Length: 156
Image 1 (cartoon, rainbow, N blue to C red):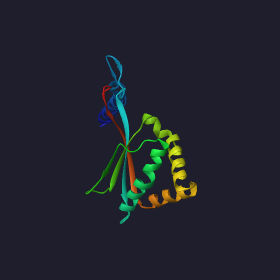
Image 2: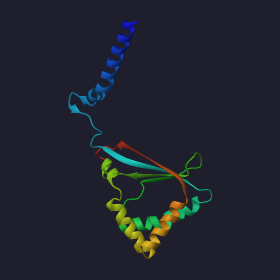
Image 3: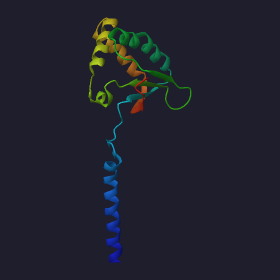
Image 4: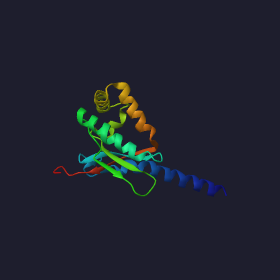
């Protein structure tokens, strides 16, 4: 019985060694460390579920207020917007993260600040811009975001 206990400990210790050593092994090849590469483009996918009866109004706010503010500010807009007919979510918005993973470090990015300033200018002031933002946010029942990447060859 005592030998089984020692055997179990050796198995667990060996498994732990491989478990923690594998990430280091997997990151190296003959030419050095492997990263996502220079061709990796990072994306944030935001899924949105609107409250019942609020989807059309939310899309109208995006079209009539948010998009013109983005154009005025010169900030990026989603590279793709998907409007679902089935499933849990009403929409998904895919944003390219120009700064890569570092874009996640901002509480309010410089682009967000510029965008809100443009929205305030178009709406007649910060209070009006805040009111339109709150109206949009009030239409959201639930939202969720994921971050990932894809590879784009340098020629593209």
